[in-house]
Amino acid sequence: MRTAEKVIISTAVTGSVNVPSQSDALPVGPDDIVAAAIEAAHAGSAIIHLHARHDDGRPAWETEVWERIVPPILDEVDVVLNLSTGGSSQMTMDQRLAGAYRFSPELASMNMGTMNFVYSGIADRVRSWKHDWEEPYVRGTYSAPFINTFDRIEHTLRELGEKGGTRFEFECYDIGHLYSLAYFVDKGLVTAPLMIQGVFGILGGIGAHHENLDHMVAIADKLFGDDYQFSAFAAGRDQMQFATHSAWLGGHVRVGLEDSLWIGKGRLADSNAQQVAKIRAVVEDLGKPIATPDDARQMLGLKGLAGVTR
Ligand code: KMH
Ligand code: ZN
Image 1 (cartoon, helix red, strand yellow):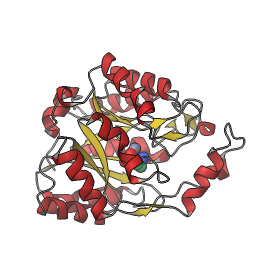
Image 2 (tube, rainbow, N blue to C red; image 1 turned 90 degrees about the horizontal axis):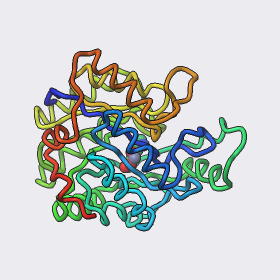
Image 3 (cartoon, rainbow, N blue to C red; image 1 turned 135 degrees about the vertical axis):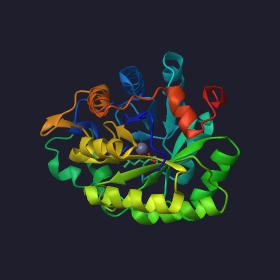
């Protein structure tokens, strides 16, 4: 791993996993998402990872919805936008790529393998639903694979990466995903500096045990040496511990309500910015400076805001 001299805080402000009935703080609808992104950037987040949602919180892919999100954020703050290509497991591949095609962002997510990605357990915890779409949506993940085949990965690398200059946050949910990434490096489709995001605690992926994080870094070191920057997060209650562990090892951190609705044991977070402030204080206590958006651009080899289609 290339040890981070400054720590990049990424914030995944809304995602497509959690649903409005779980927390009033979850940004739903474009205006909420914009406000959350701006607030998180002001709190010190250099990168904002975005999914789109309709006003009732349903995951969205339509360009018109993305257009209500991306330009208003960039009009207001200097921040690196990382657009999801994972979308939700119920979208087609073209739908998943629609926002990134439209804006050619500095960064986009890249999910490194087809897998089970199950969050039907949410349905067992919600007492009353705000919207009819939520329960069938989360229960559906029990039988729906999250498709990320090699041809799809290659297609996205070529269309967004080679043609558009977008670089990727490689989301690795298991050690095997590192080997898949190494295949694309060998093929010349992925070049250093890589941004590897270790994802822990998704049902269907590697669990949120700290030994797994150490092992992921050990294997990534073997495969990529110094050619990669590392970041990690755990979904749910272990989010802050995993972010702290990543920073401690010399990596970056990701927080946000996409992956965890919590700020402490049994306490729902009020906002994304609250999570940013919390991890920022931890990182600064470790004696590490926080990266600005320009620091992140330099460390990750990004094309800069001028390369984003507005
Ligand atoms: N919420 C993460 C576990 C993507 O956007 O491409 C999955 C994610 C995927 O962030
Ligand atoms: Zn995401």
